[in-house]
Image (cartoon, rainbow, N blue to C red; front, top):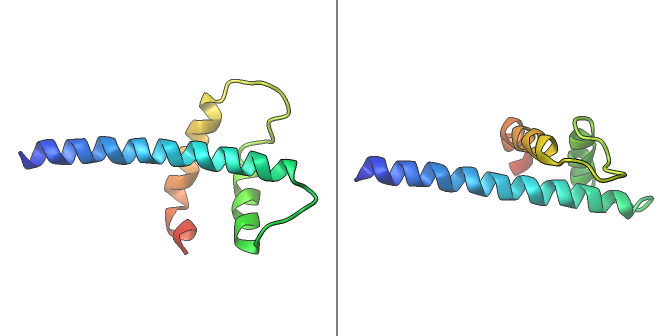
Amino acid sequence: MGANAATKLHRLMKNVQRVLAIELLTAVQAMEFRRPGTSSPALEKICTALRAQIPFMDSDRLLHDDLVKTEQFLEQNADALMK
């Protein structure tokens, strides 16, 4: 029973990570539309770091690759984002 619970928890955590990746990508895109306005230094640092990997979406394109990169960004920077 514990193994089943662990498997379900793993799936749940992956789904949460996907939702957070979508939210982050959307928020960073929205912040670009608000330029030249700025946000807090911490949020600007996150935006800059994500934009180094994923360019501004100025036209329609397939978002799968961007979402995968955003998920990887969240995994690699989880500790830094929590501070």
